[in-house]
Length: 554
Image 1 (cartoon, rainbow, N blue to C red):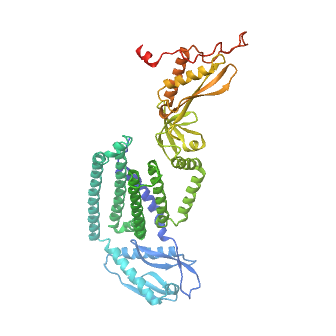
Image 2 (cartoon, rainbow, N blue to C red):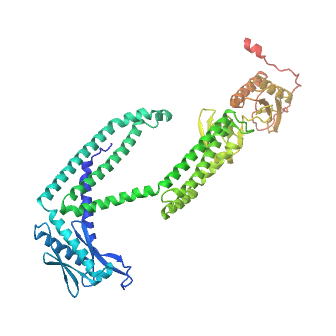
Image 3 (spheres, one colour):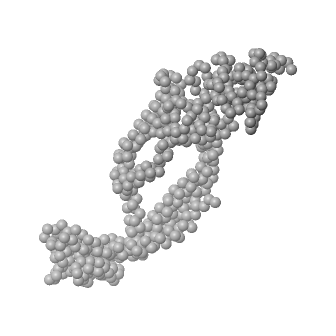
């Protein structure tokens, strides 16, 4: 079941997480901030300061002490400023200064707000009078802005601004939903039109619906990200329209904008590296394309490379392409973002260790595959025998070799096994005579050997596929207990049908022996008979058999 894109269902969870993050992040502004002191006349290496914030704007920093920590002092100044600002609706405020033995007091409309001490002046490396005026100016502007932002005109303006942002957000959501519906309708149609060749190339193993589902998922994910970004900024701008929530709006904008800016800055800083990576990629693709043209010319016969066989073209090209890509990766790694980090280096070591520990059989099969391809002992189309398997070589891969057996079975043999086994090749020509096909029969001692040999040679002559020249011949392979083992040998150049030729030879042997009343394989017995088992008379040199012409006539 495919989940539907429901942004409003996820909005509730997003608001909860956002509220929790703001709740825990709110006190952070009031924590003590360590500031490194560079003034040579100050004895402390670092002091603690806290900002005075009104309506989200930082007015100035105040210094803390052991008796009055910086956050407490900043909070007291902030509360006093707000108290003075809310005490009157006047658009302006009068700031005065009062010197004391501890420093300079800053008064707003006659009420003390903050004191600037000599320690503050030493920390900021300013004259006490100058720093007091700067603090007083900041306090004056903060009080006037506080009052101005809370007038009826300001609130109406903020409400109008929030309403405008809300209307824009509604339009944004409508566009997102329209795009979502359009994606659902158009994706499958687009994929079927532009990627129909994928189904044909993969024999419909990769369905257009599956590709469309993946594309649709990716586009919906992009829409979801855009929706949350839009809602995040909409909420921030609405809160920014009102003075009471402006500080939270600034927090929201800071949380999201700073990471986004860092990402864009990182992309821009890596732009020269991206250009170099693109250049390396383009050069690599151009070299591979050139190699493809060269090897196609070799396969077509345009280039004569001596003993270089045509079936070597594809594996040689693949090996050369892998080497070029590896060289390109060596040049490209220094330009990959994060390649010099400890995490990237650790990941590289981990991948290398995993490959070295878990790929022994894979590497051995790959190396064996290269030897099988280039050692010329086996080629595609050859009939070979590996152990008990006999078949035609239909494909030689880097990891395995495929045979089609004489029973039309597909046999997959790992190349490592192919390297470590005896391979009988029935298709390779060692000389002009061809393969020597043979079979063995046992005939009793009572039969004349010359007659047996003649019968076996006659059976070989009757067998299609066995050559007349060179002549078939008979070997005595063993003097067994009850019979002599005769081996008939005949030459053939049709190695692909040896099972059929051998079967015909066996049938013809049985036929010839039956015609001449000669038993194949003397039966076993417990003791010799009274008469010795030797030929009763000499063979006259003629075989009692009907010719092929007589057999055809009958």
